[in-house]
Length: 222
Length: 267
Image (cartoon, each protein chain N blue to C red):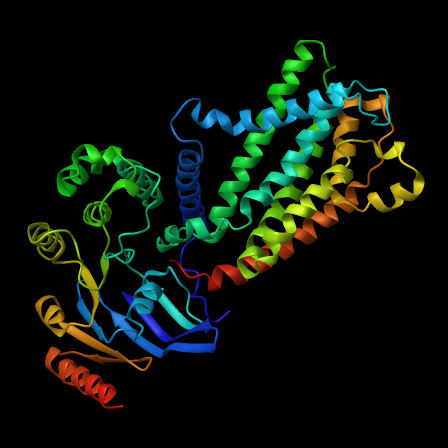
């Protein structure tokens, strides 16, 4: 279970503090597939960071009683001067996984071959994303956080990632943030809409999409 | 504090996680800093050794006046190693958050782990450098073995604590203000000749002594030297004063760190 209670997040800017999230409440159960819809800049990434624990709320609390991944679409969290293997070993050490158990999987899944022995700064963005996805599948989490559509290499590799995440890990909870209702419909059972710092939760998808369309057009009319 | 969730992780689990994270960061830091080429991680103590040897050679060549009849080699090694110990830790912790920002995406990697890692590495480097050089010069008869090893260790630990506390304080403060980075270079440079590395306090005029004894590191260096040379020198130090300085600096450092760690934004 993940519980957000009255979570507030302010950021300092050059024009004074900005409230990105305003008393957000959310509960995610094991195995739930939740989509969070929001326009660009609505605070989706901030939500994901607070849920993952990489950032702390200004007020309110975030409680996790299941293991939660780091935000997945993220190709970073890697050290450019280190090789693919070094980065894999780093992640394994941080999460207490034996690297020997995942080397085969990462080699096989990332299809990077000899490049795993090269520094990551020499990788193309597609290669980086492949490595990032392969490494993030080596740790077993109860809940995966997915920031936007995972842009991973070509269509074939993208399909492979979808199988890994949504078929092989169908029983694991997922929180997917996106601005695209189509993507949410494809992968989620419930959805919440983030707008003006407020989060509105819907058990069913259709009312969520209606609400999202309303706030989006209201914004456009401003 | 209401912004923090209730501590649900038992202390022992947290300790195991922190150990794991610091170990992972250590391995990573050693690789990024020293790589796998030539002597690799041996640079960890070869680099400070080169500094100490260079300074020793310079002082020997210029027959530096240091206010005692101790051999210059012994004097330089005890003095310069002490400087390396408390000066390199802050140098490595200032602006240390930025290059590691992307690692903060992993929940259990916190700012304090980044600082601890760098402090541990610097302590290991300076300590092995002192031990290797000390052994070398004792074996070749350039200096006598320390008279009181425990006191040497005590002085060394106090200097390391001072360096670590200063490192956490300045490292966290540097995230708040870039002034820290700009001030550190001149201040650390000027502190070197004043820190007791190149003289014994007792050799200075009383007016100078009265001011310099307030520098915490000078007390540690004098204490360490008394452990090395014992009755051959007249050491002046106030260890309770240094202990108080270390504790106050630690509390200040950890307080700023707490604020910074709550606000830090991963890349």
